[in-house]
Image (tube, rainbow, N blue to C red; front, side, top):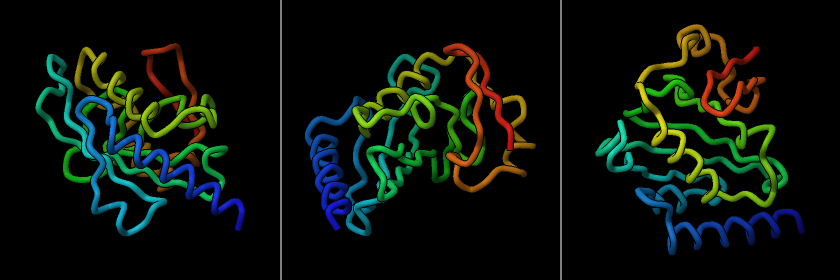
Length: 160
């Protein structure tokens, strides 16, 4: 029970932070939180002056009972999945802070900022080279994928 209380406290704190001081172009989808405090949708708009300017996306956050020691499950959802070398067409995102570089000191806001920066620094809209194979064969939970990260902006690869 204590674990759940800590989890709820932490999530409520992060919820307030996101409502009061959202990262640029991000808004918490209030409806999503009414259903469940452990599953949020964040509405996102592509940053001005980037390849995604004016585009609208949705990020799905799912928190396990081990959050914040365990990273949230984060993926794009909805009609529009950004075309980006680190984003698969099923919404899975290859980003090291979502797996091996996660730390309990990070938050929903830091994940949002990393995703904004990942999209904003993109020079060419394209899917990852192995997109269709990955989408056919991967687990529904992106955290079950074993990702390999090559340098900061290089390609990601994975093994099933």
